[in-house]
Amino acid sequence: MTKLGAYLQARSINKSEVSRKTGLSKPRLSELTINPTAKLRVEELYLIALAISVDPGELLKYVCEDVKLLNQK
Image (tube, rainbow, N blue to C red; front, side, top):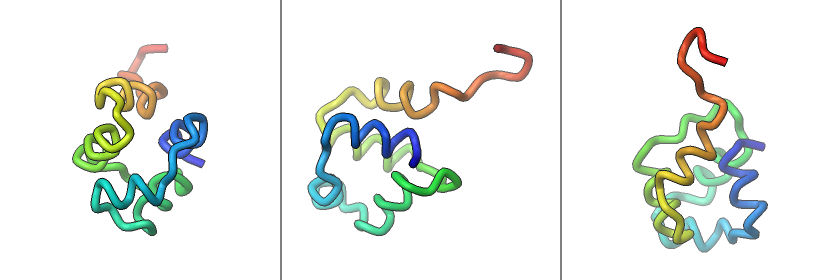
């Protein structure tokens, strides 16, 4: 499961409704929540945040919390 998948699951978010609100296909949304190698585009993240009524910056911080600059712990 991806960080996005964990975020949606922890908040009991209905992925079908997110798909309907954002226009993202159900297979694409499933890929983004299950496949760790899937690349989440910024437009997709923004639409998902709007659909679930959270600040896009909050969602970005959560999804990318493991991303660090080189030579930083």
